[in-house]
Length: 536
Image 1 (cartoon, one colour):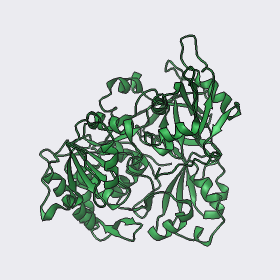
Image 2 (tube, rainbow, N blue to C red; image 1 turned 120 degrees about the vertical axis):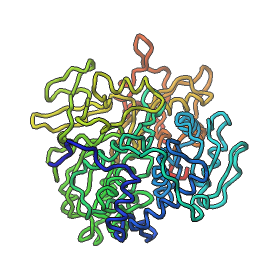
Image 3 (tube, one colour; image 1 turned 60 degrees about the vertical axis):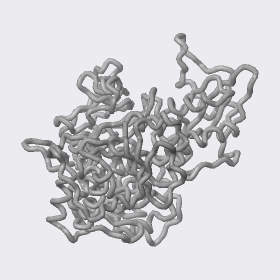
Image 4 (cartoon, rainbow, N blue to C red; image 1 turned 45 degrees about the vertical axis):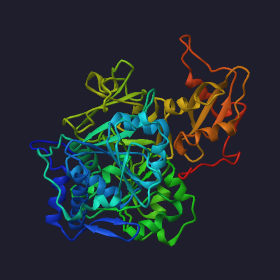
Protein backbone atom coordinates (compact mmCIF):
# COMPACT_ATOMS: atom_id res chain seq x y z
CA UNK A 1 0.00 0.00 0.00
CA UNK A 2 1.30 3.41 -0.98
CA UNK A 3 1.31 6.40 1.32
CA UNK A 4 2.97 9.72 1.94
CA UNK A 5 6.42 10.16 3.38
CA UNK A 6 7.91 13.60 3.04
CA UNK A 7 11.32 15.02 2.35
CA UNK A 8 12.43 18.37 1.03
CA UNK A 9 10.12 21.23 0.08
CA UNK A 10 6.53 21.56 1.21
CA UNK A 11 3.92 20.41 -1.32
CA UNK A 12 1.92 22.82 -3.42
CA UNK A 13 -1.27 22.82 -1.38
CA UNK A 14 -2.55 26.41 -1.11
CA UNK A 15 -5.97 26.60 -2.77
CA UNK A 16 -5.33 29.91 -4.55
CA UNK A 17 -2.16 28.57 -6.17
CA UNK A 18 -3.81 25.28 -7.18
CA UNK A 19 -6.69 27.10 -8.87
CA UNK A 20 -4.35 29.06 -11.10
CA UNK A 21 -2.09 26.10 -11.83
CA UNK A 22 -4.94 23.80 -12.88
CA UNK A 23 -6.67 26.50 -14.92
CA UNK A 24 -3.40 26.93 -16.84
CA UNK A 25 -2.59 23.21 -17.15
CA UNK A 26 -6.05 21.79 -18.00
CA UNK A 27 -8.41 24.71 -18.67
CA UNK A 28 -11.07 22.71 -20.53
CA UNK A 29 -11.15 19.62 -18.31
CA UNK A 30 -14.10 19.27 -15.95
CA UNK A 31 -13.50 19.85 -12.26
CA UNK A 32 -17.08 19.79 -10.90
CA UNK A 33 -20.26 18.12 -12.12
CA UNK A 34 -23.52 18.98 -10.35
CA UNK A 35 -26.85 17.17 -10.08
CA UNK A 36 -28.51 19.85 -12.21
CA UNK A 37 -26.31 18.86 -15.14
CA UNK A 38 -24.16 21.98 -14.81
CA UNK A 39 -20.39 21.42 -15.10
CA UNK A 40 -17.41 23.63 -14.35
CA UNK A 41 -14.09 23.28 -16.10
CA UNK A 42 -10.98 24.38 -14.27
CA UNK A 43 -11.15 27.64 -16.25
CA UNK A 44 -14.79 28.08 -15.20
CA UNK A 45 -13.90 27.31 -11.61
CA UNK A 46 -11.24 30.01 -11.44
CA UNK A 47 -13.58 32.57 -13.02
CA UNK A 48 -16.41 31.69 -10.60
CA UNK A 49 -14.12 31.90 -7.58
CA UNK A 50 -12.50 35.18 -8.59
CA UNK A 51 -15.93 36.72 -9.14
CA UNK A 52 -17.16 35.66 -5.70
CA UNK A 53 -13.87 36.70 -4.10
CA UNK A 54 -14.24 40.19 -5.58
CA UNK A 55 -17.75 40.39 -4.11
CA UNK A 56 -16.57 39.28 -0.68
CA UNK A 57 -13.69 41.74 -0.77
CA UNK A 58 -16.16 44.55 -1.57
CA UNK A 59 -18.06 43.53 1.58
CA UNK A 60 -14.90 44.00 3.61
CA UNK A 61 -13.49 40.46 3.80
CA UNK A 62 -9.71 40.55 4.18
CA UNK A 63 -6.88 38.07 4.58
CA UNK A 64 -7.13 36.34 7.95
CA UNK A 65 -10.84 37.11 8.48
CA UNK A 66 -13.22 34.30 9.43
CA UNK A 67 -16.33 33.88 7.23
CA UNK A 68 -19.20 31.54 8.18
CA UNK A 69 -20.81 29.46 5.42
CA UNK A 70 -24.28 28.11 6.21
CA UNK A 71 -25.18 26.80 2.78
CA UNK A 72 -26.82 23.84 1.11
CA UNK A 73 -24.41 21.53 -0.64
CA UNK A 74 -23.99 22.71 -4.22
CA UNK A 75 -22.38 25.28 -6.55
CA UNK A 76 -22.91 28.32 -4.30
CA UNK A 77 -21.34 26.59 -1.29
CA UNK A 78 -18.33 25.43 -3.32
CA UNK A 79 -17.58 28.75 -5.04
CA UNK A 80 -18.07 30.75 -1.84
CA UNK A 81 -15.76 28.50 0.21
CA UNK A 82 -13.07 28.68 -2.47
CA UNK A 83 -13.53 32.46 -2.76
CA UNK A 84 -13.01 32.92 0.98
CA UNK A 85 -9.73 31.00 0.78
CA UNK A 86 -8.73 32.79 -2.45
CA UNK A 87 -8.62 36.00 -0.42
CA UNK A 88 -6.53 34.33 2.28
CA UNK A 89 -9.52 34.34 4.65
CA UNK A 90 -10.70 31.36 6.71
CA UNK A 91 -13.88 29.43 5.94
CA UNK A 92 -16.12 28.36 8.84
CA UNK A 93 -18.74 25.92 7.48
CA UNK A 94 -21.78 25.46 9.74
CA UNK A 95 -23.91 22.33 9.94
CA UNK A 96 -27.27 23.04 8.28
CA UNK A 97 -29.11 21.41 11.19
CA UNK A 98 -27.64 23.68 13.88
CA UNK A 99 -29.93 25.93 15.86
CA UNK A 100 -30.27 27.39 19.33
CA UNK A 101 -27.28 27.15 21.63
CA UNK A 102 -25.25 24.96 19.24
CA UNK A 103 -25.44 27.75 16.66
CA UNK A 104 -24.73 30.39 19.30
CA UNK A 105 -21.59 28.54 20.43
CA UNK A 106 -20.23 28.42 16.87
CA UNK A 107 -20.83 32.16 16.44
CA UNK A 108 -19.22 32.95 19.79
CA UNK A 109 -16.22 30.67 19.36
CA UNK A 110 -15.44 31.66 15.77
CA UNK A 111 -16.19 35.37 16.24
CA UNK A 112 -17.37 35.68 12.62
CA UNK A 113 -18.67 39.04 11.48
CA UNK A 114 -20.00 37.92 8.09
CA UNK A 115 -22.10 34.84 7.29
CA UNK A 116 -23.25 33.62 3.88
CA UNK A 117 -26.41 31.60 4.43
CA UNK A 118 -29.57 30.18 2.91
CA UNK A 119 -32.39 32.73 3.28
CA UNK A 120 -34.72 30.52 5.38
CA UNK A 121 -31.98 30.07 7.98
CA UNK A 122 -32.20 33.75 8.90
CA UNK A 123 -35.14 32.72 11.10
CA UNK A 124 -32.73 30.75 13.31
CA UNK A 125 -30.48 33.78 13.65
CA UNK A 126 -33.53 35.84 14.56
CA UNK A 127 -34.46 33.28 17.24
CA UNK A 128 -31.15 33.90 19.05
CA UNK A 129 -30.87 36.53 21.73
CA UNK A 130 -28.83 39.51 20.44
CA UNK A 131 -25.95 38.61 22.76
CA UNK A 132 -25.86 35.06 21.33
CA UNK A 133 -25.08 36.44 17.87
CA UNK A 134 -21.67 37.49 19.24
CA UNK A 135 -19.84 39.67 16.68
CA UNK A 136 -22.03 38.78 13.69
CA UNK A 137 -23.06 41.94 11.81
CA UNK A 138 -23.61 41.02 8.14
CA UNK A 139 -25.78 38.33 6.52
CA UNK A 140 -25.38 37.54 2.81
CA UNK A 141 -28.58 35.67 1.96
CA UNK A 142 -28.80 33.08 -0.81
CA UNK A 143 -31.83 31.55 -2.52
CA UNK A 144 -34.63 34.07 -2.57
CA UNK A 145 -36.06 36.78 -0.41
CA UNK A 146 -34.92 36.73 3.19
CA UNK A 147 -37.44 36.70 6.01
CA UNK A 148 -37.37 39.51 8.54
CA UNK A 149 -33.75 40.40 9.24
CA UNK A 150 -32.91 40.70 12.94
CA UNK A 151 -32.46 44.22 14.24
CA UNK A 152 -28.84 45.33 14.31
CA UNK A 153 -27.75 43.07 11.42
CA UNK A 154 -27.08 44.12 7.85
CA UNK A 155 -28.62 41.96 5.12
CA UNK A 156 -27.03 41.77 1.66
CA UNK A 157 -28.43 39.86 -1.32
CA UNK A 158 -26.36 37.14 -2.98
CA UNK A 159 -25.92 39.35 -6.04
CA UNK A 160 -23.14 40.93 -3.99
CA UNK A 161 -21.15 37.71 -4.54
CA UNK A 162 -21.13 38.25 -8.30
CA UNK A 163 -18.35 40.78 -8.09
CA UNK A 164 -19.83 43.25 -10.61
CA UNK A 165 -16.90 42.77 -13.00
CA UNK A 166 -14.22 43.81 -10.53
CA UNK A 167 -11.05 41.85 -9.75
CA UNK A 168 -10.26 40.47 -6.29
CA UNK A 169 -7.28 41.95 -4.47
CA UNK A 170 -4.00 40.17 -3.96
CA UNK A 171 -3.46 38.96 -0.38
CA UNK A 172 -1.16 41.41 1.42
CA UNK A 173 1.17 38.52 2.32
CA UNK A 174 1.64 35.22 0.46
CA UNK A 175 -0.65 32.43 1.67
CA UNK A 176 1.48 29.65 3.17
CA UNK A 177 0.80 25.91 3.48
CA UNK A 178 0.77 26.30 7.27
CA UNK A 179 -1.88 29.05 7.22
CA UNK A 180 -5.34 28.30 8.55
CA UNK A 181 -7.74 27.31 5.76
CA UNK A 182 -10.89 26.02 7.48
CA UNK A 183 -12.37 25.61 10.98
CA UNK A 184 -14.58 22.53 11.25
CA UNK A 185 -16.82 22.14 14.28
CA UNK A 186 -16.78 18.58 15.51
CA UNK A 187 -18.83 17.03 18.25
CA UNK A 188 -18.01 17.81 21.86
CA UNK A 189 -17.79 15.04 24.42
CA UNK A 190 -17.87 16.27 28.00
CA UNK A 191 -18.10 19.85 26.78
CA UNK A 192 -19.29 21.98 23.87
CA UNK A 193 -18.38 21.27 20.25
CA UNK A 194 -14.84 22.28 19.36
CA UNK A 195 -13.53 24.16 16.34
CA UNK A 196 -10.83 22.04 14.70
CA UNK A 197 -8.10 24.19 13.13
CA UNK A 198 -7.27 22.88 9.65
CA UNK A 199 -4.28 24.30 7.77
CA UNK A 200 -3.83 23.91 4.03
CA UNK A 201 -1.12 21.33 4.63
CA UNK A 202 -3.32 19.38 7.03
CA UNK A 203 -6.21 19.06 4.55
CA UNK A 204 -3.87 18.36 1.63
CA UNK A 205 -2.19 15.57 3.60
CA UNK A 206 -5.51 14.05 4.64
CA UNK A 207 -6.78 13.95 1.08
CA UNK A 208 -3.61 12.59 -0.47
CA UNK A 209 -3.63 9.57 1.76
CA UNK A 210 -6.57 8.23 -0.20
CA UNK A 211 -3.73 6.71 -2.17
CA UNK A 212 -5.70 4.84 -4.85
CA UNK A 213 -7.29 7.90 -6.50
CA UNK A 214 -5.80 9.59 -9.58
CA UNK A 215 -6.54 12.47 -11.94
CA UNK A 216 -8.77 10.09 -13.92
CA UNK A 217 -11.18 9.68 -11.00
CA UNK A 218 -14.37 11.56 -10.23
CA UNK A 219 -15.10 11.61 -6.50
CA UNK A 220 -18.78 11.79 -5.51
CA UNK A 221 -19.18 14.38 -2.74
CA UNK A 222 -22.48 13.57 -1.01
CA UNK A 223 -21.55 14.90 2.42
CA UNK A 224 -21.75 18.59 3.34
CA UNK A 225 -18.85 21.01 3.70
CA UNK A 226 -19.41 21.11 7.45
CA UNK A 227 -17.95 17.58 7.52
CA UNK A 228 -14.34 16.72 6.81
CA UNK A 229 -15.61 14.08 4.35
CA UNK A 230 -17.18 16.91 2.33
CA UNK A 231 -14.11 19.15 2.45
CA UNK A 232 -11.35 16.65 1.68
CA UNK A 233 -12.52 15.40 -1.73
CA UNK A 234 -12.79 18.94 -3.09
CA UNK A 235 -9.19 19.71 -2.12
CA UNK A 236 -7.82 16.31 -3.14
CA UNK A 237 -9.26 16.35 -6.65
CA UNK A 238 -8.26 19.98 -7.18
CA UNK A 239 -4.66 19.08 -6.34
CA UNK A 240 -4.72 15.92 -8.46
CA UNK A 241 -6.36 17.59 -11.45
CA UNK A 242 -9.27 15.17 -11.15
CA UNK A 243 -12.92 15.99 -10.67
CA UNK A 244 -15.79 15.89 -8.19
CA UNK A 245 -19.47 15.08 -8.54
CA UNK A 246 -21.42 17.26 -6.12
CA UNK A 247 -24.81 15.95 -5.00
CA UNK A 248 -26.93 17.50 -2.27
CA UNK A 249 -27.05 14.38 -0.10
CA UNK A 250 -27.07 10.59 -0.08
CA UNK A 251 -30.43 9.17 -1.17
CA UNK A 252 -30.87 5.40 -1.27
CA UNK A 253 -33.46 5.38 -4.03
CA UNK A 254 -31.50 7.77 -6.26
CA UNK A 255 -27.94 6.68 -5.54
CA UNK A 256 -27.27 4.76 -8.76
CA UNK A 257 -29.01 7.38 -10.86
CA UNK A 258 -26.73 10.02 -9.27
CA UNK A 259 -23.63 7.90 -9.91
CA UNK A 260 -24.43 7.55 -13.61
CA UNK A 261 -25.61 11.11 -14.16
CA UNK A 262 -22.47 12.58 -12.59
CA UNK A 263 -20.14 9.82 -13.87
CA UNK A 264 -18.63 9.25 -10.42
CA UNK A 265 -15.90 6.62 -10.13
CA UNK A 266 -15.52 6.72 -6.33
CA UNK A 267 -17.71 7.31 -3.28
CA UNK A 268 -17.58 7.02 0.53
CA UNK A 269 -20.36 5.03 2.18
CA UNK A 270 -20.72 5.94 5.86
CA UNK A 271 -22.53 4.01 8.54
CA UNK A 272 -25.69 2.36 7.27
CA UNK A 273 -25.47 3.64 3.67
CA UNK A 274 -24.21 0.33 2.28
CA UNK A 275 -26.89 -1.57 4.22
CA UNK A 276 -29.56 0.73 2.81
CA UNK A 277 -28.33 0.12 -0.74
CA UNK A 278 -28.09 -3.65 -0.34
CA UNK A 279 -31.61 -3.74 1.07
CA UNK A 280 -32.94 -2.46 -2.27
CA UNK A 281 -33.86 -4.80 -5.13
CA UNK A 282 -30.97 -5.26 -7.57
CA UNK A 283 -31.20 -3.06 -10.66
CA UNK A 284 -29.53 -2.86 -14.05
CA UNK A 285 -28.01 0.51 -13.07
CA UNK A 286 -25.75 -1.06 -10.44
CA UNK A 287 -23.24 -2.78 -12.73
CA UNK A 288 -21.34 -1.61 -15.76
CA UNK A 289 -21.43 2.05 -14.77
CA UNK A 290 -18.61 4.45 -13.92
CA UNK A 291 -18.26 3.46 -10.22
CA UNK A 292 -15.15 1.31 -9.72
CA UNK A 293 -14.22 1.75 -6.05
CA UNK A 294 -15.68 2.82 -2.73
CA UNK A 295 -14.59 3.45 0.85
CA UNK A 296 -16.70 1.62 3.43
CA UNK A 297 -16.75 3.14 6.94
CA UNK A 298 -16.89 1.17 9.17
CA UNK A 299 -15.91 -2.19 7.65
CA UNK A 300 -18.54 -4.07 9.65
CA UNK A 301 -20.06 -6.31 6.98
CA UNK A 302 -18.66 -8.74 4.40
CA UNK A 303 -17.70 -7.03 1.16
CA UNK A 304 -18.40 -10.00 -1.13
CA UNK A 305 -22.06 -9.03 -1.71
CA UNK A 306 -20.98 -5.54 -2.72
CA UNK A 307 -18.27 -6.79 -5.05
CA UNK A 308 -20.53 -9.36 -6.66
CA UNK A 309 -23.50 -7.04 -7.01
CA UNK A 310 -21.77 -3.77 -7.86
CA UNK A 311 -18.43 -4.88 -9.35
CA UNK A 312 -16.35 -2.46 -7.28
CA UNK A 313 -13.17 -2.59 -5.22
CA UNK A 314 -13.79 -1.84 -1.56
CA UNK A 315 -11.44 -0.07 0.86
CA UNK A 316 -11.72 1.01 4.47
CA UNK A 317 -9.84 3.37 6.78
CA UNK A 318 -9.86 5.33 10.02
CA UNK A 319 -9.86 9.09 10.10
CA UNK A 320 -10.90 12.02 12.27
CA UNK A 321 -11.11 15.71 11.47
CA UNK A 322 -8.00 16.29 13.59
CA UNK A 323 -5.72 13.78 11.85
CA UNK A 324 -4.90 12.75 8.26
CA UNK A 325 -6.18 9.29 7.30
CA UNK A 326 -3.53 7.52 9.41
CA UNK A 327 -4.91 4.02 8.90
CA UNK A 328 -5.92 2.66 5.49
CA UNK A 329 -6.59 -0.78 4.04
CA UNK A 330 -5.44 -2.46 0.88
CA UNK A 331 -8.18 -3.12 -1.69
CA UNK A 332 -10.83 -5.64 -0.65
CA UNK A 333 -9.64 -6.33 2.90
CA UNK A 334 -10.47 -9.64 4.56
CA UNK A 335 -9.97 -8.87 8.27
CA UNK A 336 -13.61 -8.05 9.05
CA UNK A 337 -13.95 -5.17 11.46
CA UNK A 338 -10.47 -3.79 10.87
CA UNK A 339 -9.67 -0.26 9.72
CA UNK A 340 -6.51 -1.33 7.89
CA UNK A 341 -2.88 -0.72 8.74
CA UNK A 342 -0.73 2.32 9.44
CA UNK A 343 0.34 4.26 6.41
CA UNK A 344 3.95 5.44 6.03
CA UNK A 345 4.77 8.54 8.05
CA UNK A 346 2.47 7.70 10.98
CA UNK A 347 3.27 6.27 14.40
CA UNK A 348 0.53 4.73 16.55
CA UNK A 349 0.33 3.47 20.08
CA UNK A 350 -2.46 1.54 21.77
CA UNK A 351 -2.10 2.90 25.29
CA UNK A 352 -3.36 2.59 28.83
CA UNK A 353 -4.77 5.62 30.72
CA UNK A 354 -1.22 6.79 31.53
CA UNK A 355 -0.17 6.65 27.84
CA UNK A 356 1.98 3.51 28.21
CA UNK A 357 1.72 1.07 25.31
CA UNK A 358 -0.22 -2.16 25.82
CA UNK A 359 0.40 -5.52 24.17
CA UNK A 360 -1.11 -6.57 20.84
CA UNK A 361 -4.63 -7.83 21.35
CA UNK A 362 -5.18 -5.62 24.40
CA UNK A 363 -7.70 -2.80 24.17
CA UNK A 364 -6.48 0.74 24.85
CA UNK A 365 -6.75 4.26 23.52
CA UNK A 366 -5.40 4.94 20.03
CA UNK A 367 -2.65 7.59 20.15
CA UNK A 368 -1.16 9.00 16.95
CA UNK A 369 1.65 11.21 15.70
CA UNK A 370 3.10 12.06 12.31
CA UNK A 371 6.57 12.60 10.90
CA UNK A 372 5.63 15.95 9.31
CA UNK A 373 4.58 19.12 11.17
CA UNK A 374 1.12 20.49 10.28
CA UNK A 375 -0.09 17.17 8.89
CA UNK A 376 -2.54 17.01 11.78
CA UNK A 377 -4.76 19.80 13.05
CA UNK A 378 -2.81 22.29 15.15
CA UNK A 379 -5.47 22.56 17.86
CA UNK A 380 -8.95 23.69 18.81
CA UNK A 381 -9.90 27.31 18.21
CA UNK A 382 -9.87 29.43 21.37
CA UNK A 383 -9.68 26.30 23.54
CA UNK A 384 -6.13 25.83 24.83
CA UNK A 385 -7.22 23.46 27.61
CA UNK A 386 -8.89 21.03 25.18
CA UNK A 387 -5.88 21.33 22.85
CA UNK A 388 -3.46 20.47 25.66
CA UNK A 389 -5.55 17.46 26.73
CA UNK A 390 -5.76 16.05 23.23
CA UNK A 391 -2.10 16.59 22.26
CA UNK A 392 -0.43 15.69 25.57
CA UNK A 393 2.86 13.79 25.86
CA UNK A 394 3.64 14.39 22.19
CA UNK A 395 0.75 12.24 20.93
CA UNK A 396 -2.72 13.04 19.66
CA UNK A 397 -5.28 11.23 21.82
CA UNK A 398 -8.17 10.05 19.65
CA UNK A 399 -10.45 9.17 22.56
CA UNK A 400 -11.25 5.90 20.77
CA UNK A 401 -10.61 2.40 22.08
CA UNK A 402 -8.68 0.20 19.64
CA UNK A 403 -6.80 -3.07 19.55
CA UNK A 404 -4.08 -4.21 17.16
CA UNK A 405 -3.49 -7.78 16.00
CA UNK A 406 -0.14 -9.46 15.39
CA UNK A 407 -0.37 -8.67 11.65
CA UNK A 408 -0.59 -4.93 12.30
CA UNK A 409 -4.33 -4.55 11.60
CA UNK A 410 -6.11 -1.97 13.76
CA UNK A 411 -9.63 -2.56 15.06
CA UNK A 412 -11.99 0.07 16.42
CA UNK A 413 -13.58 -1.27 19.61
CA UNK A 414 -15.60 1.52 21.23
CA UNK A 415 -15.61 5.19 22.10
CA UNK A 416 -13.90 6.24 25.28
CA UNK A 417 -15.77 9.52 25.04
CA UNK A 418 -19.46 10.19 25.46
CA UNK A 419 -19.84 10.76 21.74
CA UNK A 420 -22.65 9.04 19.88
CA UNK A 421 -22.59 8.42 16.13
CA UNK A 422 -25.92 8.31 14.32
CA UNK A 423 -26.27 8.08 10.53
CA UNK A 424 -22.83 9.59 9.95
CA UNK A 425 -23.27 12.46 12.46
CA UNK A 426 -21.28 12.75 15.69
CA UNK A 427 -23.48 13.72 18.61
CA UNK A 428 -22.36 15.24 21.90
CA UNK A 429 -24.19 13.75 24.86
CA UNK A 430 -23.27 16.91 26.79
CA UNK A 431 -25.12 19.15 24.35
CA UNK A 432 -28.23 16.96 24.24
CA UNK A 433 -28.28 16.74 28.04
CA UNK A 434 -28.10 20.53 28.33
CA UNK A 435 -31.31 20.88 26.34
CA UNK A 436 -33.03 18.03 28.22
CA UNK A 437 -32.27 19.77 31.49
CA UNK A 438 -33.94 22.92 30.17
CA UNK A 439 -37.27 21.05 30.09
CA UNK A 440 -39.10 22.22 33.23
CA UNK A 441 -39.99 18.77 34.59
CA UNK A 442 -36.54 17.13 34.14
CA UNK A 443 -34.35 16.86 37.24
CA UNK A 444 -31.37 14.90 35.85
CA UNK A 445 -30.48 13.58 32.40
CA UNK A 446 -28.02 11.13 30.92
CA UNK A 447 -27.74 10.51 27.19
CA UNK A 448 -26.20 7.27 25.91
CA UNK A 449 -25.83 5.35 22.69
CA UNK A 450 -27.89 2.23 22.09
CA UNK A 451 -27.62 -0.07 19.06
CA UNK A 452 -29.54 0.80 15.92
CA UNK A 453 -31.03 -1.84 13.69
CA UNK A 454 -29.41 0.05 10.81
CA UNK A 455 -25.89 0.08 12.28
CA UNK A 456 -24.12 2.75 14.33
CA UNK A 457 -26.14 4.23 17.23
CA UNK A 458 -29.50 5.53 18.30
CA UNK A 459 -29.84 8.13 21.04
CA UNK A 460 -31.46 7.27 24.37
CA UNK A 461 -32.22 9.78 27.12
CA UNK A 462 -32.45 8.43 30.66
CA UNK A 463 -34.20 10.94 32.90
CA UNK A 464 -35.39 11.61 36.41
CA UNK A 465 -38.30 13.96 37.03
CA UNK A 466 -38.44 16.79 39.51
CA UNK A 467 -40.28 15.95 42.77
CA UNK A 468 -44.02 15.88 42.26
CA UNK A 469 -43.77 16.18 38.46
CA UNK A 470 -43.93 13.82 35.52
CA UNK A 471 -42.25 13.89 32.11
CA UNK A 472 -44.42 13.32 29.04
CA UNK A 473 -41.99 11.94 26.42
CA UNK A 474 -43.96 13.28 23.46
CA UNK A 475 -44.16 16.73 25.04
CA UNK A 476 -40.40 16.55 25.67
CA UNK A 477 -39.68 15.76 22.01
CA UNK A 478 -41.80 18.69 20.83
CA UNK A 479 -39.85 20.89 23.27
CA UNK A 480 -36.54 19.72 21.75
CA UNK A 481 -37.45 20.15 18.07
CA UNK A 482 -36.75 23.92 17.89
CA UNK A 483 -33.69 23.56 20.13
CA UNK A 484 -31.68 20.69 18.60
CA UNK A 485 -30.79 19.39 15.14
CA UNK A 486 -33.12 16.55 14.16
CA UNK A 487 -30.35 13.93 14.35
CA UNK A 488 -29.58 14.79 18.00
CA UNK A 489 -33.13 14.40 19.30
CA UNK A 490 -33.41 11.13 21.28
CA UNK A 491 -35.34 8.29 19.76
CA UNK A 492 -35.74 6.56 23.12
CA UNK A 493 -36.77 8.08 26.46
CA UNK A 494 -36.49 6.15 29.71
CA UNK A 495 -37.73 7.49 33.05
CA UNK A 496 -36.06 6.18 36.22
CA UNK A 497 -36.40 7.02 39.92
CA UNK A 498 -32.67 7.82 40.12
CA UNK A 499 -29.58 7.60 37.97
CA UNK A 500 -26.72 5.25 38.96
CA UNK A 501 -23.77 7.20 40.34
CA UNK A 502 -20.25 6.72 41.64
CA UNK A 503 -19.29 7.64 45.23
CA UNK A 504 -18.22 11.01 43.80
CA UNK A 505 -21.72 11.44 42.29
CA UNK A 506 -20.71 10.99 38.64
CA UNK A 507 -23.38 9.29 36.54
CA UNK A 508 -22.33 5.75 35.63
CA UNK A 509 -23.23 5.84 31.96
CA UNK A 510 -21.58 2.51 31.32
CA UNK A 511 -24.32 0.86 33.40
CA UNK A 512 -27.01 2.59 31.38
CA UNK A 513 -25.34 1.46 28.15
CA UNK A 514 -25.16 -2.11 29.46
CA UNK A 515 -28.87 -2.09 30.28
CA UNK A 516 -29.55 -0.61 26.85
CA UNK A 517 -32.88 -1.42 25.25
CA UNK A 518 -33.47 -4.38 27.59
CA UNK A 519 -34.38 -2.06 30.44
CA UNK A 520 -38.08 -1.74 31.28
CA UNK A 521 -40.27 1.25 30.50
CA UNK A 522 -38.52 2.62 27.41
CA UNK A 523 -40.57 4.92 25.18
CA UNK A 524 -39.78 4.85 21.42
CA UNK A 525 -40.78 8.02 19.60
CA UNK A 526 -40.79 6.26 16.20
CA UNK A 527 -43.26 3.68 17.46
CA UNK A 528 -45.26 6.62 18.78
CA UNK A 529 -45.34 8.07 15.25
CA UNK A 530 -42.90 10.92 15.84
CA UNK A 531 -40.42 10.59 12.97
CA UNK A 532 -38.00 13.43 12.41
CA UNK A 533 -36.09 14.38 9.28
CA UNK A 534 -33.89 17.04 7.75
CA UNK A 535 -36.76 19.49 7.42
CA UNK A 536 -37.85 19.14 11.05
